[in-house]
Image 1 (cartoon, rainbow, N blue to C red):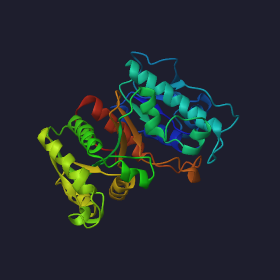
Image 2: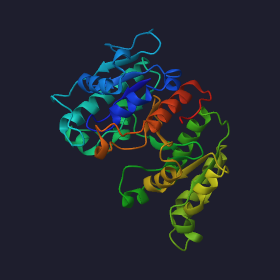
Image 3: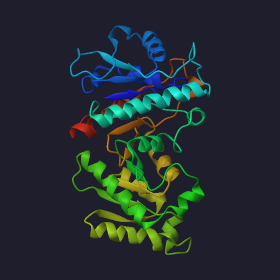
Image 4: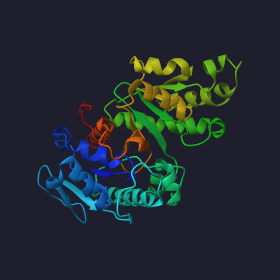
Length: 330
């Protein structure tokens, strides 16, 4: 399992190494950290895992139980970590680790890639391609049609659009995008062990437009997409008013909710399980999971970050690879 440490100035390195101190994680995952050597070594010393840390040039076939392997991806030309600050060197280091991780995953050297949080401004200063982390990885994989999905213990949400303005997101509510989102989300849920997932499609407007009183996207785009998906054999309902669909899914009525835009899905998922929801990218040729939190510059370098979300990202990636039940982190 490749683990990019994210932006060195944030909490990514801390939560990665803290997660790997948990014997339940290393019982399931053989970890390969990806990031600048200076940053990884500094955190390993702070967190008391230096003896287990071994730097390698590539992913070996065999290693000793309990080892934490690391690959120095460089591109960090600073004498010390600028905790909690936007810096182009941190952006370059974060992007270099992602590039190496994606390359190793695409070659088959890694079974999956779990990514630590990057800072959008630092990444922009370093020349990131795309609007954010998800889009950059899609670019590296040579694909365009991917979806951001959040997976928690009781709620799974996939988004028709993600890192765009709300005005643009409304324009992207098109039947072909909705159908494709249903397909990609269903594939992920099946890999998690649900053979025929029950899928709910959220409306866009208040009360799902209330038969056209508050907009016509439901009638023109969303309802026809649901009909198409049903004809293809998917168990799908909608459009369902967005103020009730997430509660119904959380109560067990649905296995997956298709949200129309970023915050519609994220607010529900994070409210119901902030530490447990894991970000994955549906539609990639590799398995990629990520923490669903940011760089937390306000506590970076202070040993205050909690690794629970990173643990759950690692465990979910392991489930996607192995297709078997693995318990969530505590």
